[in-house]
Length: 110
Length: 112
Image 1: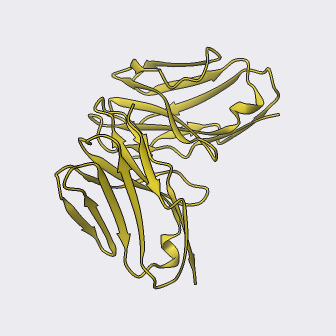
Image 2: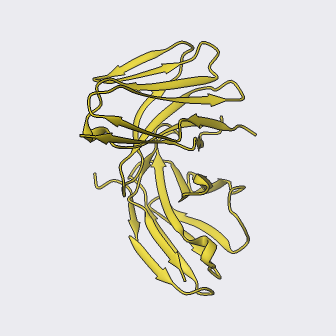
């Protein structure tokens, strides 16, 4: 079945540094979603990418969907302590249910 | 809107006991999902419903797990009998037309 691989598992950065997490699938995706989970919290929807090569920005966050629709990335510019949490990509299995990647835990040192 | 409401927030029980987790989805949402989160296995989809009908329960680990959705505003996930390996955070989520998910705050289950 479909499987979403996410790297890195963990990243520790100094405040102000950039951060990127990558998501790779073995199959072509219809769309991909990104979620953020703060420590002790629940996943919160960030964005959905649908089109091949799509790039979307939310303030300091930039999301990309690969040309082949098999990979995606989330880049944060100039991290802040409020960015701390785990970032998940999630693929739509095509039946309206999401399979989540393993997540990338981001720690930001002030 | 109050969002997705789950209860209880925390449950501590002994092995062999029955556990019932509850979820109230966002009004008007037609999809409801139950996920389980552990350090080892991450976020796993257990089962999901569309218009109160179970669509896919292939993620339910064993016959000890069962889920129901008697109406559009309520769902339960039951574990009977519970085992220590069931300890996890159980999330309920709902969505409209299967688009972005709105998660509840989760139930932290500890089976001793």
